[in-house]
Length: 116
Image (cartoon, rainbow, N blue to C red; front, side, top):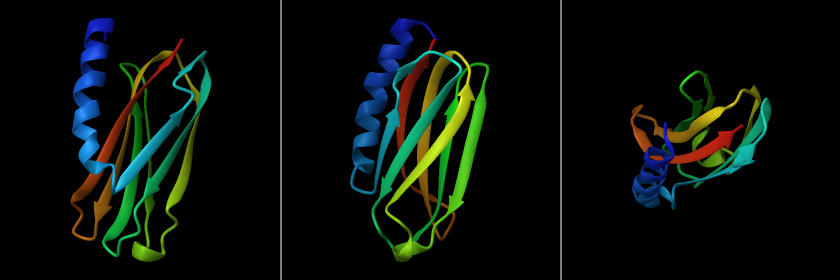
């Protein structure tokens, strides 16, 4: 992905994720690192009886990693940390999604990181 495409994607997805802010917040650290790197993805989800699963994905042109956790509705912890270790150099799209009891996506947030 070239820099122009990268900037355009950040700009477009920043607006797309704003509707999900109340249901799901995602913080990714570091946003820039030297590889191989450990990346921490902290998710904060509103407590809701319909929350049943959360998926976090890190994807680049040459790498893919994901993690799915089951949620226990209103009794689920609001905050969860995901650690993706030994991620190689690349431009990554980090996506977290919250799913309801019907299996449909309720909210999603996208972030971008760069590992050199």
